[in-house]
Image 1 (tube, rainbow, N blue to C red):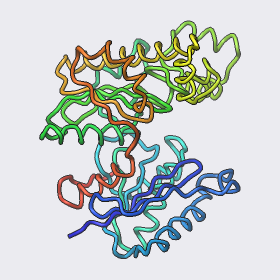
Image 2 (cartoon, rainbow, N blue to C red):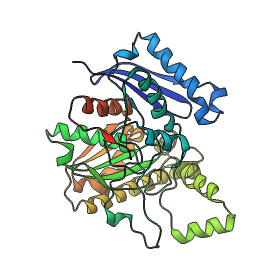
Image 3 (tube, rainbow, N blue to C red):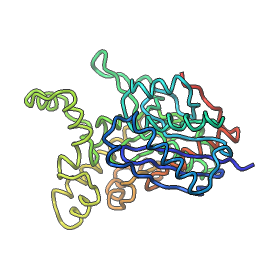
Image 4 (cartoon, helix red, strand yellow):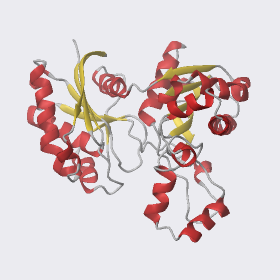
Length: 354
């Protein structure tokens, strides 16, 4: 029997919608949000976004009653293990209260549940960014009360890892991988037998710098910078997570532009790209140590993985660790469909958010 899945992935200015039959994408669109709606509080955007989703369904003659599942992008929730979760009342409460933070993705599961509950369909999320499977040792810092946390591109990282494991004719739970997601933020995860036991915080600038993130910074220099400039917490967060990296160093978050400048002879742009490559390589080396050198592959994904220039800069530093494989771009919609499909086919047990 064909499994029919509707996938919802909400961003700050758009609503990505796709219809899958099994794992075949049949229809997909990115529905742009009107400027008047973008400025409204997130929870108040629900009716307009819902209307656009129903318009998508009508356009392609998709009868909601025939759907088997609605798979939504997971938002900012409490830390959870990886997997596919039922959208339940506890999850809805946490998403609506924005207790763990507010982001457009929070609305994905809320709208999925609204549609699903009306027609008796199962609404789910898969591998939200708050997936936390860290080993205890990597949480500890040198200051009591401060711990490292896990916020990363869990959905795409785990999807790529599963795909690579399948190519080896093995299960994700049976391999050790290092996955590098390179986009506006960069996260490097150590995947040990299906769990990401170490990864940098991709939201607040930990790890390598990126087009918009500062990356890890010298402690005293950062403290002095904050003190000298009298920055508030919000201003510090903005500096390290939205205005760092290429934006700070080159005045733009457009990585392609910086790469073109580097290839055209701009020495500073080249220095920035070389620094980026070394920082990513060092992060890969750190994950290799956590995995004790037992590595079945090093995978690169995300938008910056399209750059042969960047991959070639990184390669000499890490190729001694194992095979390098590139999965450019993000396949989030497919990854969400795969989560719902694994549950529907009995391959994966649906989890309960608590």
